[in-house]
Length: 251
Picture (cartoon, rainbow, N blue to C red):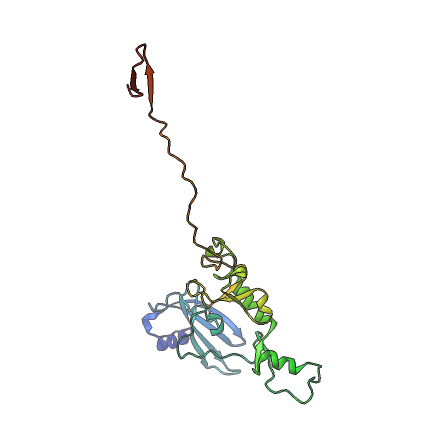
């Protein structure tokens, strides 16, 4: 224990090595001593010094010295891979976002069509090349599903506040241009420069106040009903001399 304490004091400072907490037997003649760490920068941590004695040897030597977090110790948050930390909008000018070769959102798109239109597995590569427009990779079914779910549940879907208050759906708007491929069944691109979603993907059941069928209210040329004052009125009283006297209702 004294040897372990002296080694811990060399690693830190003598005043930082507190009381002996416990000793843990790791293996035959292999023991780890734990000391309280009083370093103000490491509250709740401990000094762990592992000592060992070789077989038929009388001398004890130091195997390892480390600092380990104890209960309530201040530690760094659990490491998260950068792909899981990435959020929309993080990519800036000049930044590069590498794509894995096995990205499930992509499938091969053949840039060159072989002499035989069918490969060994019977895939029509001519059709794949036409759909992919010669690109090495194209969107997979998983990629389409992820994009569709993200767009449909976002601000350009049917549940956004502006869509619920809209006078019509994007499916009936002349400014909506459908997408290509399977996504055209659910989405299009808004082309109205005055709409909040101009140049963005919108679901067919999305909507806004810039719908192409919105019109100005026409002029009101109908007859105007007269306004009758029912609160005050005059009445005529005939006396015996046939003279007319106007008597106000206020009298």
